[in-house]
Image (cartoon, rainbow, N blue to C red; front, top):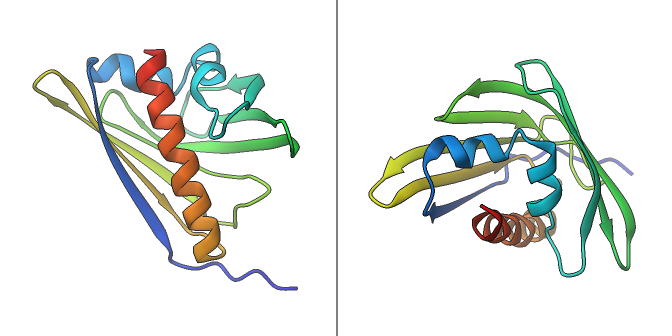
Amino acid sequence: MTTTTTELSLELTRTLPHPPERVFDAWLDPAMLARFMTPGPGMTVPEAETDPREGGRFRILMRAPEAGDLPHAGTYLTIDRPRRLVFTWESPYSVEGSTVTLDLAEVEGGTELRLTHVKFPSEESRANHEGGWSAILERLGETL
């Protein structure tokens, strides 16, 4: 079976009542990642590691009640605090070249965060990731 990399992408925008630096730093802090990188009900993150420099790697182990352990990893491509963070996205459900871009802008009352994830193997995968990222952004707001 061949997986074809597509140009499917998704974009989500949220306004969080926190300064951009605080929102940005949460994505590079393993303790914070363990608290908000839970894309589904009952999920936990028993392990999170980061090497927050361009070219550095991160690793997040998500644990799902039904599916078990779901390892995620990536490489930081751009770290422009507190405006932009770009990293590759490697998971059991991703394809080569999949990247996530976080663009942060200060707005009245906090930060507008735009998450753009590109390259999915299928429409179904994109829809699943959209649900997962939506839950993660919700948890990020609650965690901060």
